[in-house]
Image (cartoon, rainbow, N blue to C red; front, side, top):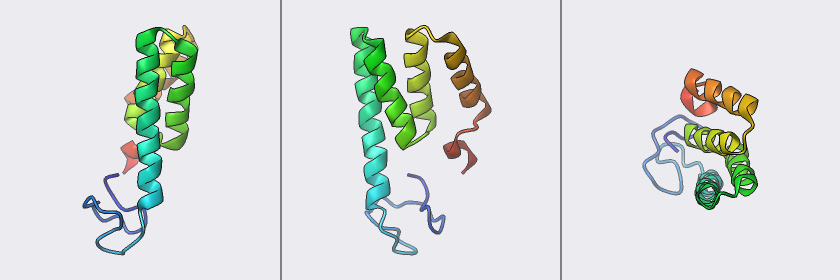
Length: 103
């Protein structure tokens, strides 16, 4: 997380915002879960298990639609030979239309 979702202050790394004292624990836990699903998706891709990779990548995007999650989902979708979906994701990544790109 780069910024506090409440006040917009730069996140200094703690469990709460240094400016407004918002508890960021749940947001940080969601980001960690998304990161874990991205790692699991990449491991599944390394094993050639496209369906599992796509499921984990999709969950990562559902939790945190970051550029990293989108790239992982695009790779899993491409490996699963779903070319129209991979192209849509590539366009979303290229246009920076994910919420993280707008901050």
